[in-house]
Length: 108
Length: 280
Image (cartoon, each protein chain N blue to C red):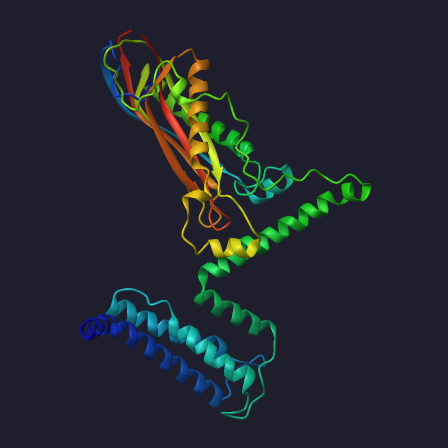
């Protein structure tokens, strides 16, 4: 599966557009989990641990988008965008990762 | 000068009326409560009723006529007047016992302060209380090792941005990164796919809890964040991803910033995404 952010594939012809495909995942760092596992909150702790969790959340979103595109019979996703949203309120420790793109199939 | 002051008064006339009416209603209800001895559980209900009614009247009038809320100024005024009367001049207006500290008085004071300064009480509840609790728990967890004589390693307060991955500087690249989908004068040999890099940057923390509390109302400064460092890290992580997949450059690079963290402090997620390609 080819995943691109560009609107076209240079040198290849797109035969069919299947439409929008999306994938999301949530990342929450709860207070209790933080306290006992040593993974502190974003603020005032080990950020790199949090970054690892962020990467795995993003990979999950990417995977679910890819599965949807495969189900539609596409062999590429073009115009992909990745966005991160903060859902946390005053505590601010829930993060949503959304990925969306257009599923297409192109001539090999 | 005179004209502008007149305009200001005309603009704000309903807001001022709302505050005054709210205060009058609160004051009257307090007087009624005192005169008729409306006491429940040994506690005069005016401490709860009067600021509440003042706030309700003020907000309703302000919403209807002024268009937006005025922030329950009259509730605060009523609260201050009632408490000065209750604590310092008991029996001056009408014979009655002084206010005593009880559970209900504490709740009433808490409720009124919450109505007047919502952000302050949120900060106290969610940051100070929770923070002290977490500190207490971690102290308990570390207690055995302290007693045994090897104190745990405490991390410093400085910013930790992971390990710096390979020091890739943008100028040293053979192929420049571009933010457009197509580069003239060359050919894309192969598309490799989506590559993403992320970094989290925190606000620099300095000083104790009090200066942090002050920071919640002060405007932010760019120096407080190490944004440039985080951006460099996000881009170099993205490049690492691309290189490990065999690409030699990244097209259509987009950089995004999301603010996370609320009153506890601020942090930013910086992310860079793009399409890795082999380009000739």
